[in-house]
Image 1: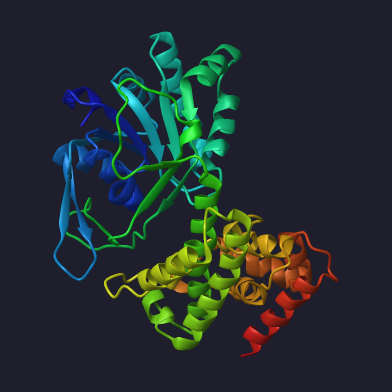
Image 2: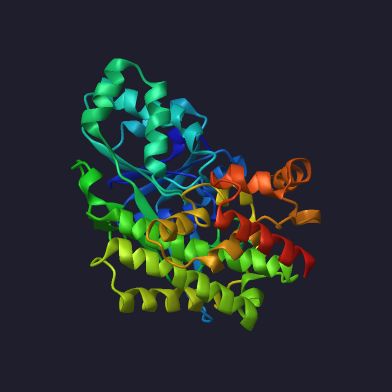
Length: 401
């Protein structure tokens, strides 16, 4: 169904780039419930057509009970259809969000640049862009890609009229089976925290229930990335080595749960030390307990192969594995269990239907260059660094065991 055939109701419009599970089950749902007509932009024509035909979908809250939230007033366009994107840019648009994955994010520069040009030509006011990705400063990465797409005049307009707000997003959205391809299953918990300092005042200026703003976003971003994502990844990698299929199976194993808990307390000590008094020991201890409880949700059948995929991305500096280690190193705090998690990640190599391209690439690098060189390249540490040697020792121990 073409965009011209969609009748937008008299309400503010939000564009959500990415109509996958997170886009529909988290960000799009929050925006819809806040009163927006949500236009999803995606490259999956089947999903785009279904959203336009039905104009609604169900979000199943996976908490052991039958709880369904219907998301209404939605439509969709192909994100490559710049003419349709241009038409949406003229609507009462105040926010653009993304949930496409960090590697895909720069590809959105072209359609979002079209929105910026159109609004500049029409003399329209400010809007905000919030990249909801599992990547620190994802919105800044998108901004850099946009600057390369625009000319000087357009960059000046963007500087004055486009708010680039970094954020932290937290909701587990596992694969979900349904007869309706639009339906999605999610855990009950969610947290969407946005940097208030980066937001522009827009017209319409809508208060979004479910989106929390703060002037200390770094603390929230690192707390989530170095707790939820760190724990999730280590659970997946240890579960893979122990031939577990799901996160639930893995965290239900006392030996794995103990390692994950120890790793989260190591990262937690560094988080509290860095962000005190924003986080206290007691507050963060409660947060860790909540994270472990979420991993133990019997209604979430999340596969270790999905959570562990793209290990090279997860092993980047500043991400969920090396990030908390670096924070511990800076503050001279213990981090041996986190190093064990890095070693486990280096052994991740699912096969068959769960085969992962990055995992294969990583294993090939280890075969060609040796584990010591690969760890040195990933971490930037010297080969005689104590932590590098500990990672290698744990790698060989895990491989042997």
